Image 1 (tube, helix red, strand yellow):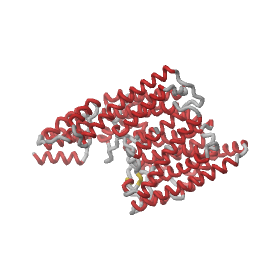
Image 2 (image 1 turned 90 degrees about the vertical axis):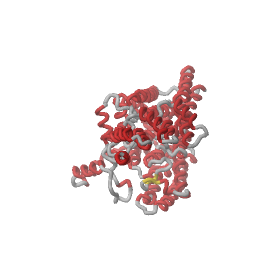
Image 3 (image 1 turned 30 degrees about the horizontal axis):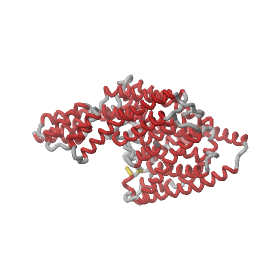
Image 4 (image 1 turned 180 degrees about the vertical axis):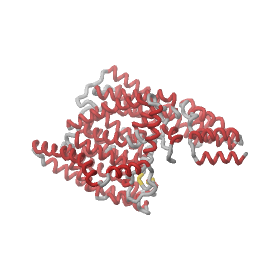
Length: 602
């Protein structure tokens, strides 16, 4: 599954299109069926079973909200994504024994580290490294800067924890520190502020909760020295006039930093095995580290009030900056800017929750709602916060189920970290990172990020002394998993594949689209493809009418139908549909231009 997540990131560029990731979900569900049928299923702790059950229940409630969602097909995709995560979580919970759980930790660290190294190689020797940047920030392999950062950083704490583990093989510790260095350098290339904040929050949480906090400090210090010293080189593309040259140099720096970390990691592992602090000394130093972490947390507000002359004015200025997208940047890196349109996203999401507090506006309803109530020109599909997505789209009911799903699992990882468990410590670090970052970005919706996270979360929450599940329960899980794969995941994937085949010039596009419609009655894609293949303007109208009828609150569906009417010279119908589209997306220039064209034709 970790290899599948890497393929999702590299081959599918982290696509959120269900047609791209559903085949991986089919594989995951069939894999769970095989595990369950082969009597390899373990009984998870009660708290983990509650979390898994609530995640499945959350998917069920998402399915219910399809009835009032503005975009039923995308809402259904969200249901399937949640079920995908539940399947991966169940696979993680089935991992038995300390060694196997350590293998999963190593797999997550290796997968993310290899992606970072491959990215460095692509920047250094690829044909057009500048094409991997968006707004002069790395957007590769996941084609979204914050998504790429999350894809790397999910493996950061597993790599650090493995590098710090005295009993781990020297080769594993060496590779882990090299992976952590590549991951950290990859994150700097993305200049993701959300990733940086989440990394800082998870660092404090690890220092407070993890029993092995003292051991984590050494590899952390090595990375800070190696990667921190190359900060300027790794962020130079943001201000450089030569993005191509800066990208090539940054790729080389990433590879060299990873190599230096491997050498340092090997040396540290060898020395660490030969030198062992007496337990009382180690315990004292560990407590001192905890005190220092607490002191640092307290010192931040104290230092703030001591150094800022007018704290109220400073806070008001920062709040104003946060609420507005910056028009220019003079800080030298993206890390120095604060403004974005997230405040506007969150404002609309919270307003929708206030209007529909119990059941929400329907899954995937935020995008259409934002088009109506926005104060920016952006067209986000999600609210950039998984909590606000849940509250606005699924209401208190969905939010409560989501919290009930995650809370017991995070608690289990925290307990494992407190006890010094390898998988528990790695899982707790990744969980605090993921939850923090997903609170300010839409990384939950990116399967390439969610799959390794839930695999690790399940493994970290699994019983350390597993008991085999009853045979009848295993058969039940196997049957249910196979049914999910073949009945829920496979048909929409086949439908999307057939639609894509018809669009790309298959020998029988009509037959492909008929089967696409039968396999996925909720999807509007077969109708959009049929319209694009129409030989005359009049022939394109019926499939677009069906698409608009299926999703009458979709601005794009109404807009495309309006354009089809205009091309067919049906001006009254064109005006009606275009005005409906404009009500769903006020101020959109392309719609306004089309309406003016109708007036000129009249």
